[in-house]
Each structure stands twice: as structure tokens, then as C-alpha cells.
Image (cartoon, rainbow, N blue to C red; front, side, top):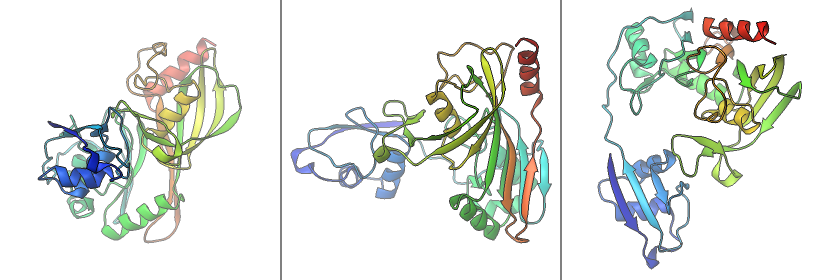
Length: 308
């Protein structure tokens, strides 16, 4: 990681952050700087802001530039739970603990590398280090996701996500007894202003529109079993929204730091992508898939039911 500290002079007042950095940092394109800003690698007076942020003059700017990642992803054969596969799409049930694509601290052992070994043609679909990846799940979240095996399938599925016609339903166990039988959380999500690893509910100018629907399935003494549906798909959306209600996901130490430990030994998050539905990019037929709860969540629920 290369760290650069800069001070904005008076002549920089009124200039966009990305444009000012382009003029004052050599070797980095404006597009690269915009990506670093989006990734919370740039802080202005200690705060994460957007690329279009207007400078006043006199601010202190810190830029963290991570080392470049290899351009090519190496195939790594690994067991995959295949729910459906045809010439155009691959639907997988990801286990908790598996990273979807390479990132900081996770260069190997990813689902993307395993998919590349299983279906080498996806190397030419989507990004070089995210071959065929249409959407993702957090490392410690389990469940369904779809991989595009052709460029046309990728473009069509990405368009369906943007149009919000892809159905994604999750099952989750959260801390506390959720009072309402159902509800909608409509709150923008953006990078945390002081912690680039975390997301947070932010004002509209600093966050992206995010909507989560939830329904109570069962209540226990200190926990609630929920069905959750995503209307949008922001990073960490369910985790951030449920924590904002005071009901963090069981096992989530990032957004549930003050929550007690799970009542039984538990790995990962009690969050499972149980249903996935989309229109097949070639046949144009609506397809729906389900993945049963993993044993770790079944064990947790069995304990809660025995100790109501």
C-alpha cells in the first residue's frame, strides 16, 4: 500500500476532488482515482467523500493506493454445489466462508477461480477477475447466485438486475424480537465516513437508494427468524438495514459488535440466499430456484425452538 498525503492550496477552491487529484498526482488516471475514491481509499480531512466533492482549499487529503492486482485469474478446481446448469447460465449454492471473487486479502480459493476451472469459457465473460459474476454474496453469507456463461447472457442478466426484475429472497436470524410482523426499510447506503471496510446508512447525497422488505417467520425469546427480500442490491444491504433497526444478523461482528455471542457455536452469518428467480436470457422463461437452509442455521433454529 502506497500512502500519499497532500494539502489543497487556495487555488484549488471550488475544484472537484477527482480533477484536483488528477492534476496533482502523477501516474494515476482520473478513472483510476475515481475508483480509489469509490473504494474509500481517499479521505478529505479524515472523511470519505464522493469524486464530485468540491474542495474549499486548505484540506488535508490522504490517498491509499493498493498494489495492482494480477490481470488474469488462475483456475482453481474446487467442489461446487450446482443447482442448475445449461449452455448459458450456472446457478450455484455457495457455502459460507467462500469468497466470491479475489479482493484484498483473498487472492486464492475464490468461487470465481473454481467457476473458471469448471467452465473455462467464462474467462471471456464480464471482468477478468470476476468471470461471469452477475452478483455476489458476502464471504460469510450462504446461498444462491447465478453465473453467466456467455457475454449475451451476462448483459441480459445485468440488465434484469438493474431493472429490479431478479427476485432474491433470504432467510435470516437476527438478534432481538422484531416487533412488527413485516416492514420496509428505505434508507440510502454508502461507505462509512470513517471506516472504509464498513457501509452505513447515509444522507442521500452520500449514499445509494436501498430498499429491504422483511417478514417475521418465527419469534424466540431473544431472536427472530425472518424472510427478507431485496428490492435493491447494495453492498452489505441486509446487514446494514437490519442493524439500523437494532436487530443485527446473528454472527455479524461488523454490524453487531455489541450483540451477544450466538447461543450455539456458529460460523458465518445467519443469512442465507434461499430463493433466486430470473428470466432465462435465451429461452425467456421465468426460472426460480431454492436452496435449503444449511445445517449450521438448522442447528441454530433447533436450539432456539427448544429454548423459547
